[in-house]
Amino acid sequence: MKRVLVTGGAGFIGSNFVQYMLSNKENIELLVNLDALTYAGNLENLTAVQNDKRYKFVKSDIRKKEIVEKLFCEYDFDTVVHFAAESHVDRSIEEPELFLTTNIVGTQTLLDAAKRHWKIHPNDKYSRDYRDGVKYLQVSTDEVYGALGETGMFTETTPLSPNSPYSASKASADLIVRAYHETYGMPVNITRCSNNYGPYQFPEKLIPLMIHNAINDKALPVYGDGMQIRDWLHVSDHCYAIAKVLEEGKIGEVYNIGGNNEKANIEIVRLILAELGKPESLITYVKDRPGHDRRYAIDNKKITTELGWAPIYTFEQGVKETIKWYLENMEWVKRITTGDYMNYYKSMYENI
Ligand code: NAD
Ligand code: DAU
Image 1 (cartoon, rainbow, N blue to C red):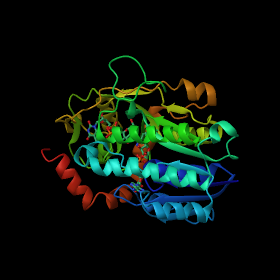
Image 2: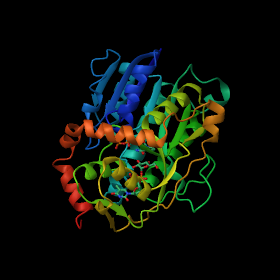
Image 3: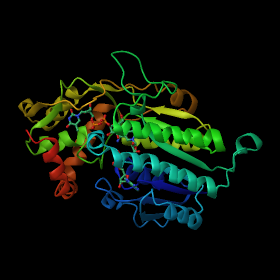
Image 4: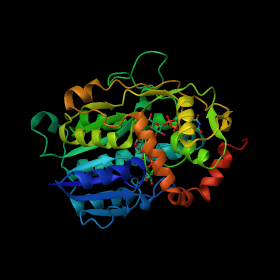
């Protein structure tokens, strides 16, 4: 039976993961969700599990060392799945410091607490097997590899070459996780996933922003020429991949996760407009994002061949379902797109 600490479980992927684990894994004895509830965290995402006796929510900050240590003592976790982060590239350009403290210092605080609680010492790696089943899983991103030209794909050995304060903070966190493994023998995995979409995604990211604006007949702001390419994966396929790596991933290994589903941004915007029956005249080209990565593509051979994972969703089906979800959950969107969101939106898209 597993005692799991999930950080950032009130965010987009974290809340999907909490629901996924509690409904699919019978070996969960306890799942604690530690989340600071920043603008991106929303307990409404978790109403389906709030009465589950195995689930507990703790509102706090991963950078608060004493609290993190206390949680380890109180709940005796054997598994950590670390999602909590500042996750939006555009915000990182405006406020890099927040990204460095949350994404780097926060990661190190968790690693330290796990290391102490699991009594991991420098020569563990060489002297004995890892303690039964303990594992720290770092949820990272393909953005740590930087940008690709027209060809090629990111493999797990592609050198890290991040271009935004967000991706630099995630790459730094990955290097710290690696260092804890190499130096102390900390039992870790790192997953690096491509762009996710699906239910509960905050409407600052491309797909939910475009759906939200199209529903409301507002301009759809496309950066630059709209020809930047991302590899899109449904969030439930990401959750399934993380669960696979938790259960079967070889200690110390990195696993790329991606859906072999490269699309240019403008294709996605057009698809959303077509699905909603809205005119292409809503498309508005705006100033490009500084340092904008041109193309990402994930080589997922390692996780598919070694762990037998493969995505279940096709993009067409996933986008249809996601649009339907946003149409059926307009109240959810309405509640999070007031106040601070409006200020953010005005500062980002003031000219349209
Ligand atoms: P999100 O922004 O939706 O959620 C982040 C969550 O972390 C929120 O609930 C927030 O309240 C919480 N949080 C932020 N700072 C915190 C702190 N100091 N202490 C505790 N909690 C804090 O993010 P997401 O899109 O769900 O991404 C989750 C993770 O997955 C991130 O680490 C991100 O880098 C990674 N990732 C995201 C994608 C994607 O496409 N969204 C793809 C690959 C990897
Ligand atoms: O690749 C994984 C990463 O994907 C994650 O690590 C990040 O947390 C997540 O935010 C996401 O980063 P991106 O920058 O790729 O996602 P975003 O949705 O912000 O943008 C996707 C593409 O769409 C990108 O090329 C920028 C473009 N875009 C985005 C917005 C918000 C627009 O053209 N207009 C917009 O208004």
